[in-house]
Length: 342
Image (cartoon, rainbow, N blue to C red; front, side, top):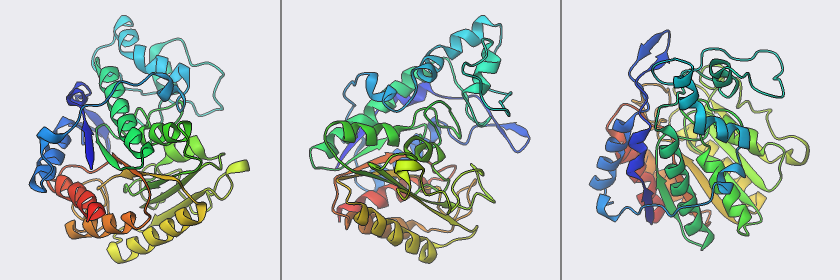
């Protein structure tokens, strides 16, 4: 399996995040990547074998995200500095009423307009990092388009970002970008399987009204966990997309026996959908010791479900999502891939 990676991820390195009422060191940071790579290498995936991405046109990103949102990401830091603000771009004001057609002119208001959670920030070099990780996701999708499988080993994650908003550490929705790219090169039906602990609200939102991309998410129940307002069982799609979204919200403390039942159900739905290609939002924050999650999967469980995903027999694009604060995130990620390849 080809692994696409870019060292440019270090250019997105927020200084702090607002977490439970305090400014703390970010859970999502370049250190995560070092933990991921260390685990990959322990499993036999050599860093030296990782491939840099091919450059892709910006249109592959704007096929999923709105042009005004991309312009905001590209210019937010400069506008923040021009306004006399210091530190990272940290939104603090959010619209509660239906949104205006245009964001506020002031960058503080614009930052809130294009954001849904205050843990997501923009730094001076974030856009350089983001465009490089999008290229990694697209390069992995290129391999799947040829009938193979590949892994985009990237950070920050992507599945909380909507067409026109950032959220939950996510600024570009890399799984959605990859899925749309697969559609654009000929896959008639693409399935997205989100196994991150947190619901992939941005991915769901992007494809909610479509019948050519199927979205399945297994996640912590929104009554208890971020993103809170998405991911209930009754969210099944809208209009032409009705029936092409399925959510499996699970209770705190869920272990592999129950989690794997949801996985089997999701895979049955993907088979019924008749997917030509699969995108996996690979979050390993379902681990029993993850600091911001509550599931109880163990390290051997990841190899088990990698094997199960392989039974779908589809060209597969794995894209790295969550997994925080413990060295096992690398071992767990590698286990999914080695299980898939077994």
